[in-house]
Amino acid sequence: MELAIYLFSALTLLSALGVVFSAKPLTSALYLVLTLFLVAVHFALLDAGFLAVTQVLVYAGAIMVLVVFVIMLLGVDEVNEGRRNIPQFVVALAAVSVFVAIFAGLSYSAPLELKNVALPAGFGGIEAIGAKLFREYVLAFELASVLLLAAIVAAVTLTIEPKRALPEGRGLKAMHKTKNQGVIS
Amino acid sequence: MELATDILIIVLKAAIAMGALLQIASLTTWVERKGSALIQDRIGANRASIFGFDLAGLLNTLIADPVKAITKEDWLPKGTSQFMHSLAPFLAVFPVLMSFAVIPFGPDITIAGKTISLQLANLNAGLLYVFAMGSLAVYGVVLAGWVSNNKFSLLGGLRASAQMISYEVVMGLSIIGLLAVYGTVDLQKIVVYQGSNFDALPIPRWGVFLNPIGFILFFTAMMAETKRAPFDLPESESELVAGYMTEYSGMKFLLFWLGEFAEIGVAAAMITVLFFGGWQLPWLDVASFGPILGGLVGSVVFGAKVLFFCVLQVVIRWTLPRFRYDQLMNLCWKGMLPISLVNLMATVALLIAINS
Amino acid sequence: MTEYYLGFSAVLFALGTLGVIVRRNTLIVLMCIELMLNAVNISLVALAREFQQVDGHIYVFFVMTVAAAEAAVGLGIVIGVFRNFVSTEKESIASLHG
Image (cartoon, rainbow over all chains, first blue to last red):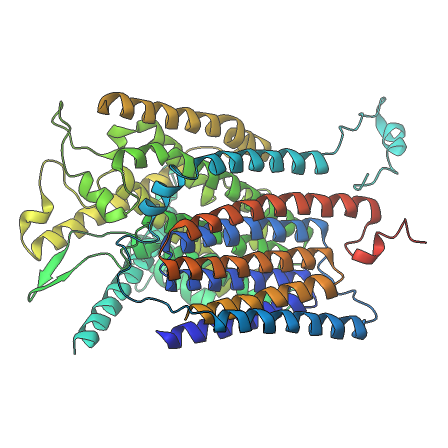
């Protein structure tokens, strides 16, 4: 059991490194899909069955499809990171290492241990989550739906193109007038 | 010893499940070739024959086609990497094969005192797992469109992915009402629920009688999700050459094809399990036939129902003309989504009224 | 085991932060933000397992919802910026530079 956890953690770290350090955005996106899938495996190992499936369904199956879609729509899957900023990288690496050290130190010094006994039946299943979600957290649930609606409206407003007026007249003359309006208006 | 038997049983179940799905896929390919010929009043797929016997097209479709595809040259379009080019068909096929893991084939069988459930993995959120795998299938399409380095393939890939994610929404919404009636998302429990009869009428409590509009919506959305006609604009043979699959030849093309027909099988299996009683026979209790006979009869019944729906999907493909892309998207967002929401509200309202 | 998961999620979070600081492509920055959110999800689920309360799972549910909303709006912004600057680099949005 522990072996499975360590193995999948190693794989997750490797694919996270792939996300952060890939040259092209599309490769990074595919590594991120792999990372999300492995995180879903971690959820399953932690007795969170519903969350594992939701992670694949929502994160890997919808959000990342959107990201990949945008990469392909814009056609920006190219490498153009010019001069590297080594001092910035070193300082950032030092800063996040300090963060990891502090956090890991704190968590290893706290008196926690994973209790392997007496997990309530149906823990992490869809009934348990549904019971809590629609009783104690129903307000947050409704607000989340409003948030999603706001996000939809925002995304459409940001990206909608105003309807271009059709050229009057027929033939090559009318088409010539609109020749200089490109796709990106 | 116990662990070894358990592993052996799981491996055997996996082999049988995968084997069944792949057999359904190849048989549906043959039904497509010969069935479309019948519908279009022609003889199809009769070119391959041994000593004059062509086995009604089976020789052509099941032996000649794969051998041709395997021995074809696998070439790469300019400017793409071999890895991405090979990854796309893998991503198109893998989720479809994985989604067959939660489908129940029959009631539990008992061999030598050991109860074996005829379901590879009894997940608590079984139905959601199938939807999750369906949403992963989008990657194969969109990656294939991109990696072909070809504007028309890219267009086909983007259109296909937009269509797939739109119809996923309808697919999910259309069955929530039905799931409220069943009270569970576990597929084996759903099938067991459909064994009983209604209180008032002597008909079995199948999903199609509980929620007929949901069945129509789910069937349509599933056909659109698997990019089958009349929703097959992404791979339309008369418009975009082969859409996102244009630059693929040989075994990779056949993998896309296999993925599509396996998706037909998965769609038929889902419809059977959710709406038509799975492995249940009407007015008979299959589980009480005996420890092993019950399982066998259940599997045969399930297989027959799945084959019926595969043939139905093939017939629908060759009967209806194709949607234009904007008609397709309008149908989803302006037609089917409101209907599925109204269906959900009506079903839940009826449920509350009956239960109070 | 829980402390192992917390340390692991800290490492993932650190990798995400490193990516946000160092990388110049806005799309990759968005993906590193998603990586950070997933690191937090892992630690929430580990702690839910530790204290045996499903509340942790519900927090993760809401984090996923917010991440979806934020990804949609973020990508809308990326598309808007692309329309005006024809580039997805952080450094190209430099009109207000001194």
